[in-house]
Length: 458
Ligand SMILES: Cc1cc2nc3c(=O)[nH]c(=O)nc-3n(C[C@H](O)[C@H](O)[C@H](O)COP(=O)(O)O)c2cc1C
Image 1: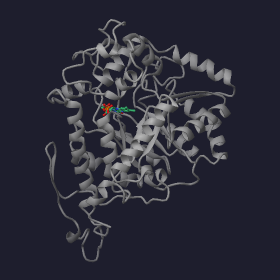
Image 2 (image 1 turned 30 degrees about the horizontal axis):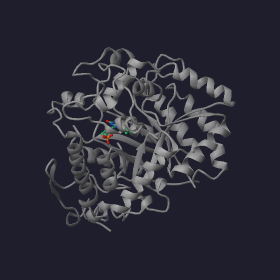
Image 3 (image 1 turned 90 degrees about the vertical axis):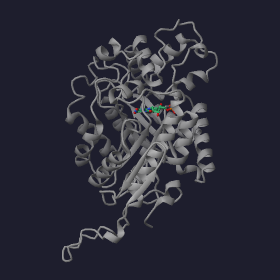
């Protein structure tokens, strides 16, 4: 068994719950490019597979108003656009992959396809796209002047996302034949006009016609990640994703998600392991177990209940700040368009009859984090190995703790050598991100992916 290693980041002062005031936070560094190049170089040197950037145009609002907590404490606010940093980070690294979150609401397929293709060229095929419909959707809709979500919007946004991705895939896979870009100076032929053709797509939600202006890149299609494990989200993953990002809460829960994603891949005519399920993990490692647990307690003490409620609203569209703490979650009235992010709600619904108080308390300690792993280097390595073996997860994305680089450098120094010695990390994988993630396959979308049928080439 080998496991993939990624780092989960957002270009904001906190990454999730407020930590920016802590001396080990990144309150003063988050908008400094050198902070991110240091991180990228650390991960690259340690052999991490990718650096993943979550991102959203939105930020938590409650009934159209920005709560004071959002602005004062920096809850997913303010934030910079990670995509604009990737070329700089790639120039400082040799094999690390970069996965960037980009939403299907608010963007248009052509622009998204062009930006990812540009990055795939500039990085030599080290790019992945985390496809999301988008969190904090009410805020995004308002910022972009979009019509606010209609009833049933959750699933229809995924329907639109299916079309969005299909159109991007057509631009990447259909427009240019592999040998179209000849660059023949003597004949003054940059590209062979007989091998470049227009794409044509008329969907219900998206349309696009014309020749793609970026020639084929090393991977053509960036590695397709997906996050959002509602029923509709998983159907979207079965059709489109090569990797699914989850926030695993326990071995049984994560094992169930992995089994379900594998089954859905098979139902979609794909091999079960076509989709790598990767979980977030917040890891606190220190030379001794006691030191690690003391750090964990210090981190937990930073989180406040009000901040948790605001962030919860941002992800789900459900405002729990107005609810009596004793109200049962099942009795909370959902907003007119339904909950926009169901994954989080499902997490608490699965626990049976829970009250608003329990949801917020659980979310305060856990936030949008995955597995919580705390201990000495060997304890952490043991636990990651056990989780991976018992769940079928393909790997982990490390979530920052206090926000600074310390949690990553600690992990790289203390845990990576143990994982490597145990043969749990691949030796010299790559060079493209797709080959790192699915060793033995090529740089291009697998022939088993449903979109392989769209290809003009091969
Ligand atoms: C693990 C996880 C990570 C996510 N990361 C992002 C993100 O970075 N940006 C974003 O806009 N939405 C993010 N989302 C939310 C997605 O936009 C998702 O499309 C939304 O939650 C609706 O889908 P769902 O009901 O399937 O969860 C994430 C969701 C999950 C579960």
